[in-house]
Length: 427
Image (cartoon, rainbow, N blue to C red):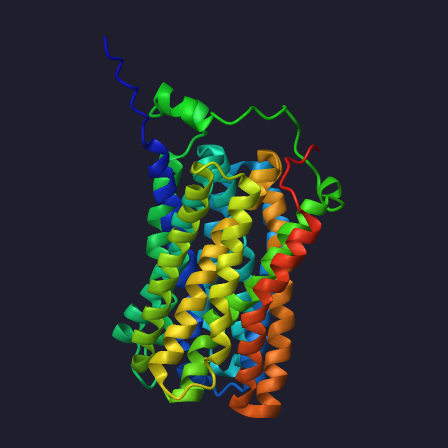
């Protein structure tokens, strides 16, 4: 008699779809300023390079603070309540951008960006914690790659819809910051109706629950305080890998300005190049998560699979150093797109490093600590870039892309030095 294998359920993928949706909304809100930036600078507010740098620094400073605080809050409140709190905060401050007047100058925008950064800081700790709760280790990189692809979908949607509602002279710019609140409200309703832990969810079949919990059980533990996580070297290995966040934020917040300065592209002209960059980044996010999972299925250790994938990503980023010196607009766009795709593949695997080595109750806090380091790196990069572009003009982008191309190799070397073997951390 032939025994038919029991079919594994698929409800966990519905939960993942909600993570993808939230991350997409998150990045629509985050990307609006990068798309509208040259128009707001030249046609509405008259910002200088340093003014814009200060606005982005305000977001990154809040994001760093938010990652430290929101990670701990999410571990304390739980994923359901913590994620809801995060999206409520960022939606309110996203809408407040529309209330900024010319008389408020860059400070008004910086204040709105600060609040946005606090709220948006909760997205990735929440999502990574959810993946750790709902997926076994062998599926986590792929699952992280899928929800992380929402960053690129959000960055694609922003340049698609903004030129439809904002005029080339900046008229109606306020509406760009209001529209996502509707999507946020829909998500909050869906999330609170759908989410429970898999062990408590009535729609999770016994076979799917068994699959989700197929990893060796973790010892029961209370919430792990930061003071126990900060001395752990694996925390700082993750933080070192997150240094590359500064490069991603450079593409997100300064990519439109670079294309404007180098090739004269404005609001409508920026749409197609930015869409191409983030479409390829989307492919990279999903493929990067798939690749390390495929290596594990071939019998590779988790350590080897993750790090070889990260090495491939670091190599693919290197050509971006040529972007500011090529004369063809589309070659520059494709070089940035390749680097953005490699970054997202890198990011999908870096996030998974945390759930690979830390117990679930520490995941959101460790993601918050590492993300704070990434945000701090972004602040330093913005301060330097604002000064370089002020002193050297558009030629300053040569130095920016040189650093952007080399950061990944350096970060991977530090990760290997700190964490040569990815063994589970005992806390």
